[in-house]
Length: 201
Image 1 (cartoon, rainbow, N blue to C red):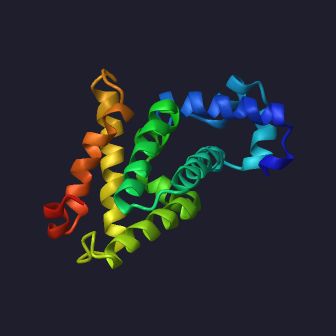
Image 2: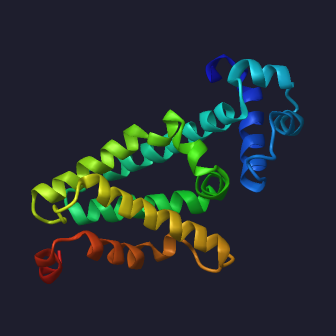
């Protein structure tokens, strides 16, 4: 549906969605708020999206798709598993630091039950990419294989989410991405097989 919208109108909607939903309570914000902020009629928005949930998720999917594109691009040529995961971890922290509004929407504004009910929550392309890397590590005996690769992914993503949330809570006094290496070493220790830790892999 977004493709049918005039690009200039879509750009105004994108800006309005980001501004409204990154600073407002999700349940209190409405399509009318977006319409007023974007200078687009309520009817136009409703015709193309149908609900505020679908409106928000449509743009979140676009923004998350850009993050996935960055991950795919940056992983080209990296063979070492640990360095692949370090890069993915840094890219996420960097992306959310640069796109704070998206981080606020995904991690703080959207009610988890509402977010999980939408197909965009799965972010299959990104998650499949990451799970494949984690499975590779398990098959090579580098990462903990006593749990599913999905559990390792949950561990990483939970760390990213909490790091972003507390970065906001503490007043953004330091660069979030600037701490990526130190934070990643903590994550790595939690995922690596004991012998991998001893060998310093």
